[in-house]
Length: 124
Image 1 (cartoon, rainbow, N blue to C red):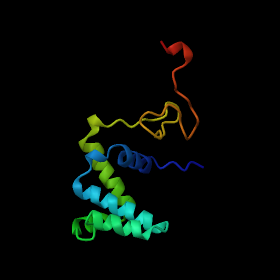
Image 2: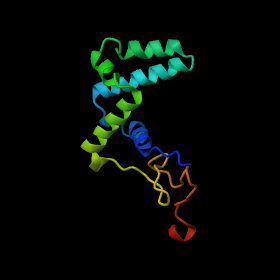
Image 3: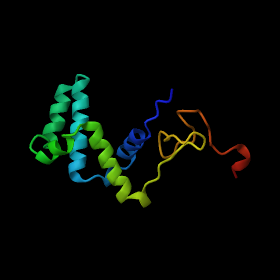
């Protein structure tokens, strides 16, 4: 059974490695998601601090962005970034299975184990 969610993997990759391309409202919504994740694991005071620090409760645009759900928002915002900044974004993929690598610098696939590090004879 293949549990591959390529769109979700790409969205997470874009959020992690290309945050500079999100709009201010998207970034604030990202902070709201982060705050609620902290609350969910028992860090309520940290969540409250994030909400206050970023003025999240006072911004109706943040609530509007998240109205359709967190995952839908993350994918929609990442899709916009990919469309508008395609020339500036490189999605590092495994050379064998095509899945998204963990980082832009990764040279081994977390999913299938394929390794594309240069061999000893390839180094100068």
